[in-house]
Image 1 (tube, one colour):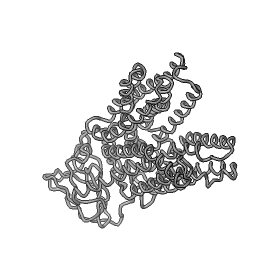
Image 2: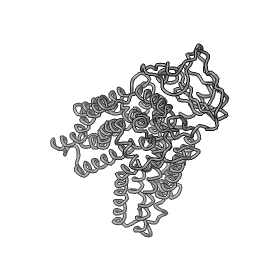
Image 3: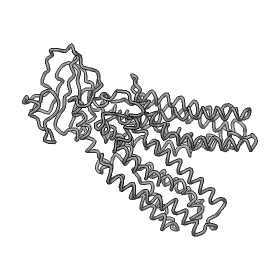
Image 4: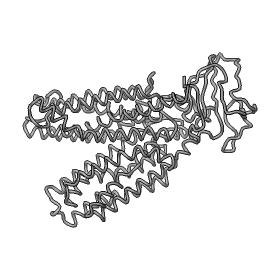
Length: 576
């Protein structure tokens, strides 16, 4: 197959994964933000105020409890995904089913369960709990599967970086785009149904239906436009895992725990500050009407960060991108503390606060930790590992909600003029000083404890492949055809035939495995027999071919060539 055709397939895969998070992120915005607004403004309109208040308290309290419970639930759901086997792979069925079911249940919730609260608030409360839990489970299955798919699309760190960056970029558009369309859709549909210029229940249902349809379309694009890679590493880990193994895979993999701790420290700092930023403008600075600048700056910087990451990562290791982002965050806090009376310094601080690669670096490090863990303990948990980062986001979001509630209650109807020096100092401790310390600690943890660099991951992939080929790690792929007793294997390259034991690799060790070696005289590799290409590494330095008679052979090209990341290789075939 010509290289430009293969490039076209790669571009299609990138674009499909990117568009997937457009609808997925918009859907999350509806369920996490606008559903609460609908509950408090329209769901119980016309009901007795005391009953409506109790129902609102019950529903919002339930959502917090479920958010906390997800810290345990998400790894379990990830294990369900990891243990799924279908001809479409293990991720696509859950992406589609999870999106369809959660979209349907969300629409039911946006109808107020078909107005049941007006007839029996007790029955409504019971059904709401059941429906919301089901909705949250199926959404989480879709979410875990979408991000868990990244290591199945490529084993190359750079390609994974592109997938993750594109997903984050479209997610920013999906999330921020809601603020543009929500009011026009809700008010116009409400006016058409009721004749009133307001945000009514009919308008909210229409808004939920539009975003649900978008999420379903985007899920279909992901399912049809991407393809899971099947190679010797992924095929070697097809055994089912127990819950004990799931949590063991997380707690016994230091390159999951340390990046997660660094991200937790960053996320707590960022979420706490953002959650209380409005109150800083209202009570400390005394300029609540200028708060809109925060959203504008965050949106503009967000559009720039994700697309620039894979470009910068070509020249700057992701560890230093993490440190650079956290340093910007530290400088932002310094400006917030000492320059709050200067508009220019405050805006510069907002810019620095949002120049951060922590989420992208963490997702990629956790993705690479999948092969690291497989090499270390023989267990591969793709969806489980990628569920860790959303768990942290949910936890820090809950912390932020609690602090926002505390600040709102503590300040009451105060104004900036009412705030004493003691009040301002207390506020600064919560919103600035503690986050500043957390940001510094995240730098220390990442620099001292996170060792899984892009180069080390490439070496891990190579070592893992070699050990699988030698049989030192259990391999669950199908056994070779035992009936193959005699088959001619032609030399795949022109050159000097050598014993494999004569080959010394880049680490000054004998090259592992069984077979033979050729010192090539030309830079062309051919099929050693008639057959089918079973898989090719994304770095193109190795492939497996199965003969028409069932003989399986791995052809490895060069020494240390995995580090080239495909540069210098050109293939004229496609897997399968």
